[in-house]
Length: 342
Image (cartoon, rainbow, N blue to C red; front, side, top):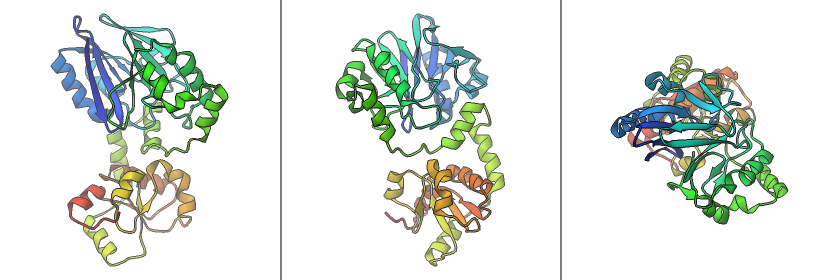
């Protein structure tokens, strides 16, 4: 078997191929890694037969549609996926044949309605249904804790205990687990009664994914790519230079509200002096209560300036007419040697 794991932040994707036929499948590809996938396929000497998304992602942009244009392989998703660009829609019990490798489809709703796992002999690709030491969240669109309980305890966890578990996400650098290890050590799986499992999932207080709005819009509708969204957003918002912001920060200007859109750990590690923390995933939910005056002047910033550009465009659509984005982001501010608060 040919097998390679790719990581982009906490997002995991997998190349699995047959060493005899040289056919391969790519599972949960992420848009920023397209060149890596193509390079790996060339290095292994395989041709991509399937591009598979285990579910409609809310936290990253799928590369399936863009890769399909290059490698002429179908995008595979569950039949309940809202994505109009899915070329091959599968159902529970279906099988995808990749040379001598057989990928068996398990419909496992819960994290999303269209979630599925792929069981291939000694391993299972669990998407966001089962994670290492956790499970997929159920508070995003089409999530359902009752369905997740049934998918886990009636399907996935009944696979052979030695089955290797490869999830779509892991933020601690772990590569895989096993069904037996998850049954023994995963704290969420210790809630073995349906009612207590559902109660636990409903009480989770999780931050929304950074790219929630844009990722769902793109992955669910087959809409514009990230590059297109950025280009359009960049044409609708003005930008502020590092030097101009530094002058305002240094001069103790009070006519500008700086919103830092990064997650909590990044914000606490170092942010522009005076910045308010408002994670991108919570922006639309909290902006009216945080800043009820739509005439206030706002500067959005993120690590590299891309998320803040999209967010600035969103805020302008919501009626905040004096929003600008920081050119280059906090990373550029840091590299310029400007002061950071911790």
